[in-house]
Image (cartoon, rainbow, N blue to C red; front, side, top):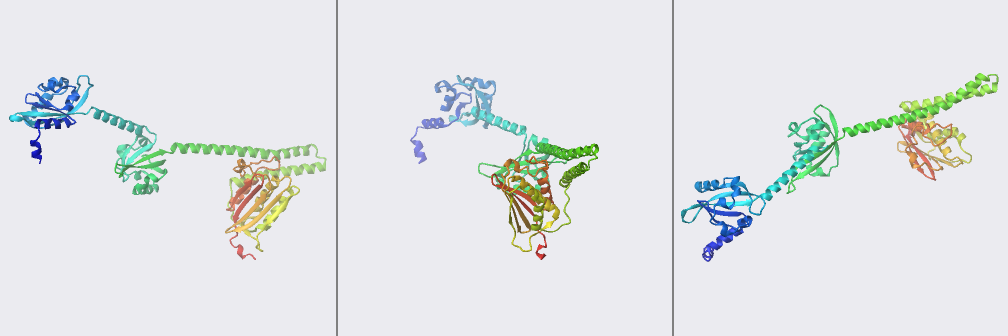
Length: 493
C-alpha cells in the first residue's frame, strides 16, 4: 500500500512538503558548501527567498556567523569523516532582525550520483536561553532571599537528613553548612525533644498539619537555644514527598526581652509595695509620735496620759500587724500542725468578731449543711477565722447602708466550700485582677490597709485551698473559699 502510494506522488513535491513542516531551519549543501536547498522555516527566519539562497555558499548567506565560528570548516569535516556534529551554537543576525542564537547540528548526506554533502539543522534557542537566564536569575534571587533571611531555613530529605543550611542557621548555631550536611536534623535537637523530631519524619505525611513547635537546638559551643519551628513538605509533580522545609525562629532575643519585662514588672510591684508599706507605717508611727510628745509635755494629766499610752500601744500594734502580714505573704510557711476545724462554729466565731463593723440594718442568711455533726476542715482555726473576718469586713464595707450577708457551707468531695456573699454594688471588671494585690483598696477608711484580701489569699493557699470571686454589678459579690476537708471527719461523733 505504501509503495503504491509513493508511486503516485511527485517525489520532489513530497520532499518539499515534508521539509516545509519541520519547525527547524534546514539547509542541504554539497561538498563545495554550495546550498542545494533550504526549507520554508529557514527562509522565514532569514527573510530571504529560495531563488536568492539556492546556489550560494554558506559564508554568503550568513557571513556574520563566521566571525565567531568556523562553520564552513565543521561542515567540511562532517562531509569528509561521515560523522555527525551535534549541538553546537552560533549567533546570527538576519537583515532587519535582532541578533539571534541558534543551536545547530551537521549530519553527513549521500547525494544523488554518489557525491557527498551535509544537512545543517538549526534551531532558534534565543528565547529558550533567555528563559534559562530568567530561571537562573530567579534561582539566584530565591537563594539570596533564603541566605538573607533572619530565620533559620533548613531543607532535609524525607528521612530528615539535612540538605541545605542557610546563613542564619550558621550564625545561630555556629555550625557551617559543610559541617551539618548529611546529618540528621534530630541530632541537633536537645533531648527529650529529639524523639519528637524523629517521630515527625516518621509521620511525614502529617507534617503540614502540625502547628509551630518549640525545640531546643544544640549549638557548637555546647549551649542550647530555644527555637520556634514550622515544618512543610516538599512534593514533586506526582505528589510524592521529596523533602521537608524547616523554618525556625530563634527565641533568644524574645526571651531576653520577656525577662526584662518581668524584671520591670517586679520592680514596679516592689515600688508599689514599698510605697504602701511607707504609707501604712507612717500613720501609726505618726499617731504614736504625737501621743509620746503629749505624754512628755502634759504628763500631769492622768486621763490624758492613759489615752496617750493607749494610742502609742495601738500604733505599735498596728505597725506590727502590717509587718506580720508582709512577712506572712513574703515567706509563707507550710502549715504542718493542723486540727479538725468545725467550719460552722469557726464561721460563727468570725462573725462575732466582725459584727461590730456591720452597718445598721444588716441581715444574715445562713445556708448550713444538713449534717447534725457539722462539716470539718483540716487547718488552723485562728488563721481560717482571720480569712473570714477579712471577707466579712469587706462585705460590710460594700453595704454601708445595710444589706444581706449570706453564708453558705457544703462539702464537695474532698473539699469544704464556703460561699460568703453580699448585696453590695459589685466589683468593676477593671478591679477584679487587682483585688488580691497588696495595698489595693477602693476605700478611704484609715483603718483599712488594703492587706485583708492579700493576707486571706495567702492563708488559704497555705492550707492548700483556693479563693475565687463571683460578682455582678448592681447585684452583689460572692467570695468562694475551698479548703481541704478533714481526712477523718467521718469518725467525729
